[in-house]
Length: 276
Ligand code: AMP
Ligand code: MN
Ligand code: MN
Ligand code: MN
Image (cartoon, rainbow, N blue to C red; front, side, top):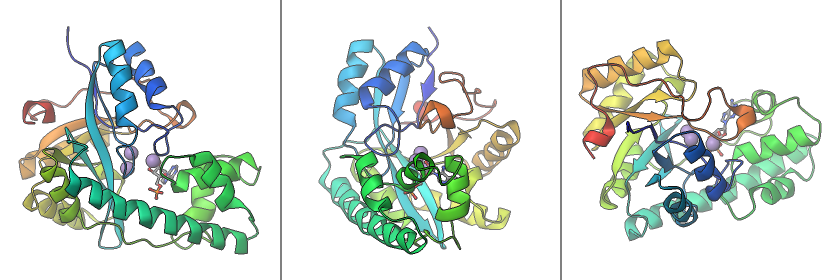
């Protein structure tokens, strides 16, 4: 039986719509054999996901998606095969969790000034015990009828220059990579095509990522658009990085592919699961 990988997905431990149990079950039904639950800055969903993975006979890869800042840009680094009990990792994540809470309060205050009172409380309710993210604010604003969909909310309220945007200093990429390595995991640069930076800056980012000990690029990421895959593959080859595959699944409404149907890696790349 060929293995089918999806190494980037979210549960209710951050901004995914499904609980870890439901997410794993959907993956199993979709034929995925190895999946990584990569919640934003938390490993809180992994214990539950592991129980479900055992029940469904799929492989769960312990993972996390860490928020970092690189030159005013927020850059995500996925840690795969981490030991979630590692103190260094958990201390690092704790700092980001505090930043998330403080940022959410500031987002709420700014949205209130822009005429959206009560958004913080509503976003906190939607997040429950999970990490609070901009996605929770976006879902609330859609639910109260102030925007048609989440994408519109980001465009109108939550991105740079918009009333609810809060510039945030996350971890340094090298720091996040260090936490991941200390936890015995491998660091993957998530969705490289999504950063709004020049081609030159992208090369610098990848170079620094590799120098700091990162080992793979998410070559098949998110939408799975062929031109994105090709350009990510070219960067991976040029820098001698392994390649990962991740849907970044959050919920069926904001999803572009059927689970379990990610395009395969282009030829000539070393899959991350061969080097971890
Ligand atoms: P945060 O980490 O709190 O800044 O929230 C970022 C999350 O919001 C991402 O992981 C995505 O799930 C979501 N997101 C960011 N930008 C957009 C966008 N333009 N449209 C839809 N979702 C977005
Ligand atoms: Mn997200
Ligand atoms: Mn991301
Ligand atoms: Mn993600």
